[in-house]
Length: 156
Image (cartoon, rainbow, N blue to C red; front, top):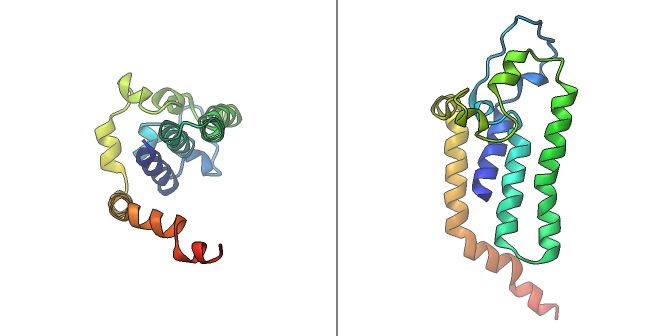
């Protein structure tokens, strides 16, 4: 779940929202929804929420649940706030074709997950997959050297 969050956030950064343009769309003008925005209109917030949920499932202490639970809460508050702020800037067609919650527009048939994948940046997909495989392969070694380095024990 954490990797899905990282992937979603990275795709949201690579494929910016139509909201970031300075152009104010007129009533009949169409907005082309592409890439990760076919899945959710808030990919960075959604990715952070997935990352937080994954960390909450991995850790069980109360302090971890409170900290990582803030990420899904930030997703809800931030997404609702952005929808409110930019509600008049984009045409109704954009709002009807996209969804705040990931995969809601795909499940209702308004969007296609296959088209979203085809429109995503191939280089970013490859880079994310490579970094994910590398991190999994080096996970034990990196954790051991970071947390239990010999220098830390010499200081005691």
